[in-house]
Image (tube, rainbow, N blue to C red; front, side, top):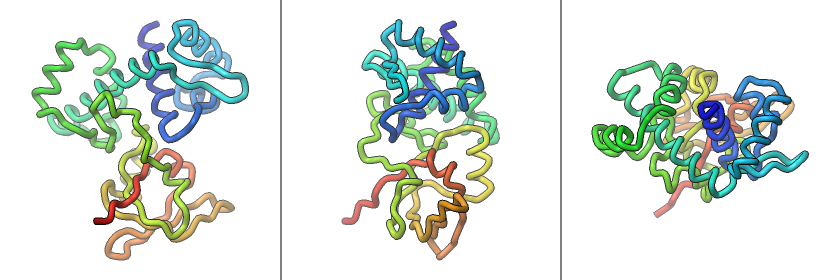
Length: 218
């Protein structure tokens, strides 16, 4: 039961990033369960004072739920770093394996792993590791919400297997300037220009889970 509870908290935390609330539809999608299961599980999380549920508007983490989710995501991202740097796993295999490892870590093991890895600051997918900043989205905008003509930095993305594979296929890099040249909502496509005038086309659904920050000009 604890693993299930932690898995839901992880999903809610990740889906709440750069969003005000998380819908039951999102949780159903990422947990791959029925709406009835989501309703029952989030009701239990509310009973434990980890989430706030509101009919029609979705779910948010409480302060207590947020603290627990931040620690879970810290452990998860630490395992992502380990699997990528030390075991050289293909990126698409990393998220599932990392979560299987992370949910069993003790505080002592977490501290030892963090020290062994040199106290990494970010995961291979751009996520921040510091627990106090894991869910800080103050200056973050979803790529799908960036206006045409604006130049931003893609900082991180939600590491589902499908999205990892997709972004590797189109070769969208992190930490480089990208400019939105066109948004076609009829075709559900976003057109980006990268350095050296390289152009790529991106599905808008994927852009919902890619997180950007403004470029800081000196």
